[in-house]
Amino acid sequence: MSGVADELDGDLAFLNLETVVTDRNDLPPDMKGQTSPYNFRSHPAGLDALVGAGFNLFSLANNHSMDYGPKGAEETLYHMAVAGAARPDGKAIAYAGLGADFEEATRPGCLELGGMKLGFAATGIVTGQRDEHRAGNNKPGQAAYRRRGDFEIVVNRLREVPADYRILSIHYGLEGRVVPDKRQLDDWRAFAAREKGIDLIVGHHPHVAQGVERVGSSLIFYGLGNFLHPGTAEMKRFGMCRDYGLMAKVHLTKVHLAKAGPKWTVGAIEAIPITNTHVRPQRFSPQDGARRIFALNYLGARLGDSPGAEGLRFTPRGDGTGLYCAPGAESLGGRIGALCRAWTPAPPVPAQLSAQLASACADKPFYGAGRKKKRNTNSIFGFGQF
Image 1 (cartoon, rainbow, N blue to C red):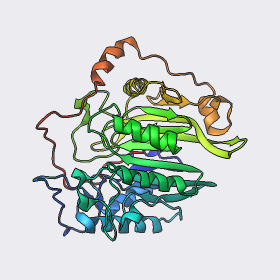
Image 2: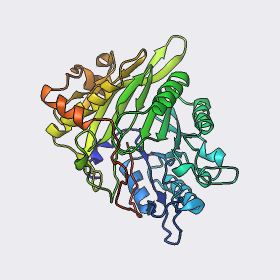
Image 3: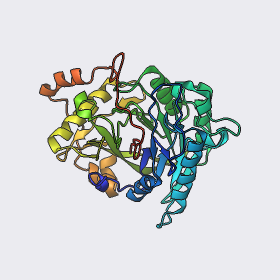
Image 4: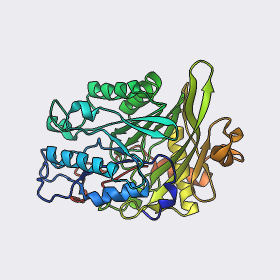
């Protein structure tokens, strides 16, 4: 991760840990009702490397969390607990989405960061809606995102936890699709953001970036794409709307509301496109990075600007990253003010790029019927997003 190590400089660094964590070689893979499933496992040393790099918030709810059955889930939970207890700096990590039973699987994680109390919950798809992967009474697993009742329990428990800021991780979406589907808009925008007021909603699973949106004071990343996914294909063959992962730095500021009191809200967002996610993630060149920022803006514009919602556009910077500043951010002090003092809103997509983006960002999955992918049975880190 040396190519992006300098970017891991925040108080909070999130990823989706899409793998079983174990040092055992005797765990039988779960066949998931398939003849040749993809089963991911990673050595605890890989988890230690992630924690050592600065990651401290982990989603464990995804379609590979149960790749080695209940024993594999128990291994992951054990090694997550060990990783948190073994930090030499004494700082805590938090994780959510997987549990020894349904209560634990839907229980929010919590972190204290510089006086801010953070609440975190995670849910994701269950392969084939298989009941044995869904947590139950005295049964390891996760909440099944596509079961509406499970999803509402996860969101409501997060909403009820005492916290200054709440983050919800959702592992869902059609692989390769760069446009959110109706379920995402209904569940994430309408329910989690508008109705429940979840501050930050982070999506992943399609392996590609999707647009970024503000809904009132809530922020939604519909898809982050890959961060590190060893053993998979080079993403460049899918074109410039699908060949990058998205790292994001969300800068928060505390505002004081007359009736509600202090509240943390978004001051600025840095968008950092990354490449080589199949081997060693790194930044693009400035020119290629700017093209991906325009691709991300194209997707943000497609979200539309409905009442109370805004598809975000990022202003390309000279280093190939993008910046969005909330209204009034230029007058703030500290890092947000420094970032936003000379900021101007994003320019239109250059004419020479418009036709390319219209083709590259067409709403379609990676593969048609009879798709073929390389089988990967031993992923170093699975894939993660920040």
